[in-house]
Length: 209
Length: 209
DNA sequence: CGGTTGTCTGGACGACTGTCAAGAGATTCC
DNA sequence: GGAATCTCTTGACAGTCGTCCAGACAACCG
Image (cartoon, rainbow over all chains, first blue to last red; front, side, top):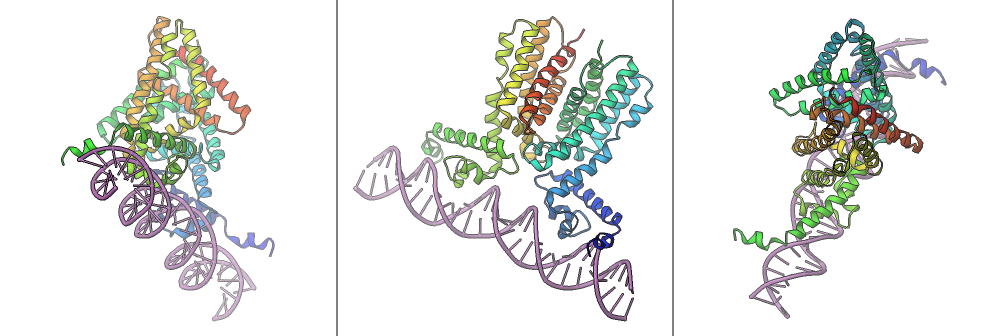
């Protein structure tokens, strides 16, 4: 009776698969409504399950959200790996990096605004802080791989710390994301072009003499 | 009957004074709890009024929030004016600017996290967008006054657009704010020192050759 | 002084929230 | 095939939310 329950419990893969299914539905709803207005019922409605099932797979709402955040991280952290691996010249890397930034901003805008939402909420809700901090570090490393490789290809060193490099690029990206949500398609396209220009202007400045 | 109502209505200054009182209370509560969890009752509890009075001075919650945002803007927009006016050397301006950044980050952290919260919420809630966009432009101009004056004192030009300059500095500030909320006082102090270093490293890079 | 108007209170409303529990199907094991 | 277990649905619960409203109180005017 003590340990059989674990052995009996489930294939565990199945259990995790369901959790991932729920996480994907939740991420879709969260990206649409934001953290504050995405209720468990709404999340369940946008999935193939009923609202009660959430508490079968997760203890409470916060555990679901945190699980979602971690699940989201696993997908996005390798986003620029090919940029780093395939580049042979500094300018080539810069072009590919900027293009990838624009691509993910255009195609995955709801996920990005959700991330910024959750990161901001972590300043008010302690339960989110740990998971958010962890992911933020991972993103910083992700950006640092790009920036340091860029400097390496240019035969220079980086004039900023990894944290500062992440901070400034993230600031540009967040600004572009905000401007991208205006609703006007023409303006949205212009934002993407501006982002390319801004990144091309900024990155060379980050190289030390 | 048509216009007497306006003349009769009230001293109008009194009316606005009450709105400002409520806005100040609301900003205090919003800075503490964030946009999502600051209810009208909680806001009223932290003021000297009861919860019903809010709908006497504001049509609904959104109008109160937007009013608060505009009220907040009026206070903070001139924050760096003395930095710009008093500086005589580029390094002097840089020191004063960094010191002012650290000061407001330390002393007005709740207001700043509220601003980032509202700005992020504006990506989900259309009603916030207009007010947020307007303030964001004002902040961009505020930063541009600092950066362009810095370049002027250095006898150089700025290598970034006003938007990009605001974006990168705002990114650094937001990152520092996030790291400042960890709870550990020693870490919080280190964050402030790091911000000074980062700003001192970044600003010279923004100058064109 | 009575009456009109501006100001504010406190309670009520319906809608919505996270959470939980009872029970129905489905699945698996002996 | 029967029993135990896993999976999921449904309805209920106690709160909280924004909003509205009847009425109390105060201030001013004729």
